[in-house]
Image (cartoon, rainbow, N blue to C red; front, side, top):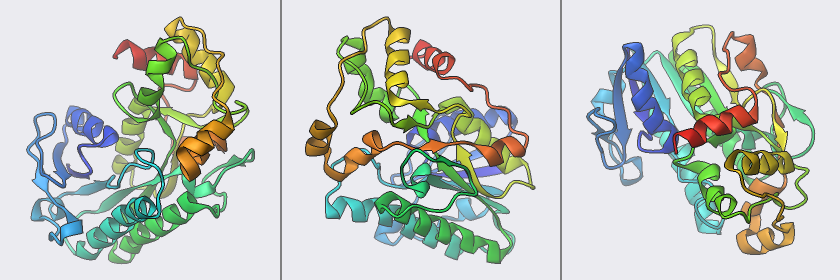
Length: 297
């Protein structure tokens, strides 16, 4: 099995490049600069400058497409929002347009639980899309990926939650405050946080590649989401630090603008399709997941 990973230098992509050879699979890391990743020779592809889809990608048995500008890396100006959307939608469109007979048999394409919008209601893969910026972006992104089905390609849509990994993502940004003893809940702390351990992300992606009966949306979230205040309390306990200083919601909205919705509005998402497909999560509870992640920090 040869697997091309687009966006191989990102948090999830790099971990996939490290993990998949252990299954006996050959990995082709694809990125804008073509960097080698974890001992695997990289391939360059930058669709934003008009690069053609590389032959090494089209020769793979499976493609995992994780390309996209960071959602939480900068304030959401109009220009930043265009970049977030276009780097996902346009890249996926170009990739699918290049697929043809004899090429990859499965496309595992990135998406996010932002598809569902925000709120208290429990969402599964059967739930409808939301109406905010992230939801509209995910809907457009997934539509481009699903176009590959007309070419006989099996498509899996990865609706990923908040990934727990010490080396990147939301947790890395929070760790300095919590380690200093000045961490705490965001806003009122009642909002839901749908998290997932990085090992379960890579494990479920491999499961999706390997099982021909898996297609359509998969929520990459642990089966037990938590309230944000419980997340803060648990992280403080794992670190042996107090975690009671809240960050007022109004301060976050003033500092981050529309992007503050990621932290303050919350989503309660369950991985119904993943569980129904037979995937067993390694980490279903938050505290063991955080202890494992931070033991590798």
